[in-house]
Length: 203
Picture 1 (cartoon, helix red, strand yellow):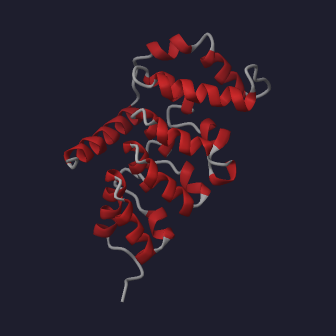
Picture 2 (cartoon, rainbow, N blue to C red):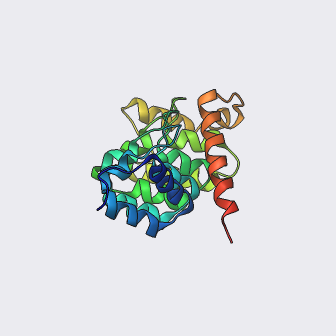
């Protein structure tokens, strides 16, 4: 007879499966414990299954998780107030960025997701520009999505004004910023640890 609630070890195994893209292991967990248990899984820094998945670029697993999780899971943040999208941006996983952003708004994607800010007050595009080298393709794609949805001359909101500044005259300011706040630094270290552990398991 299956238990109603996973043990701490089983939660840890689920998060590891999401780090390494083990779709079948994740499906087995869902079958035994249900979607709510997947949604409630967190590591010691508040990272969810979507953070683990997006931080390592597992597109197939991400599509499966989005098909079963509620929209609120997409915008759930960790202790640094970073959503899974920002982890995908940090490691330049454009495949995951596209899947998240192109999801319908009612599923947590679209402009509301792009406008979500982290502890440093940066939305997705600001974050991709601020992180700099290696994220040019991601930043370019996000810029194109914003222009497609809102037009090249966006007016009328504070979010739009910020985007216009970054897309135009203020890009250099963000690229040259060298003061890393502790929250963002912690997020970078978290993702780097996740990626290093995943790489060790690759054959």
